Length: 130
Image (cartoon, rainbow, N blue to C red; front, top):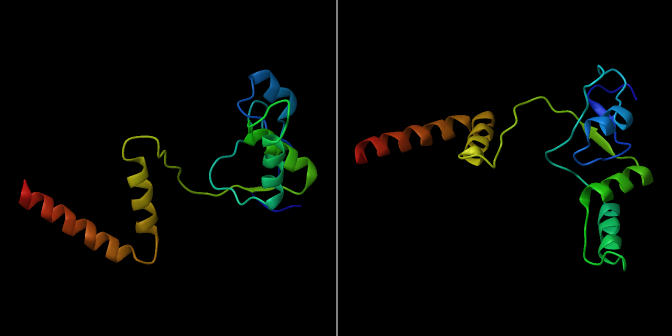
């Protein structure tokens, strides 16, 4: 409670319609029409694997897995938190997106000078070969 940018997840709805979002995804403190979404890295409990295993063994829908449904079930069973991190998002599905993300990590880390030196060396080599 009272921790900035920390949220307790109560439900997970994948790609809700605008009406569904208005009815079910109200977040205190956010303006009407604004909602939270989550993506990125998840640190999940072993309970999630149990829920996914139950889905795999469901006789009505054998071998089908729905991660969003499992996450929503998890939120009902145990405390499930999300942290809002400040920073930039990189779309690794776009051309050079993964490269940009890796460069950003390298340039933000303790080895920044080494990364920069190697980049300059690569650029110099590519100019010589052109």
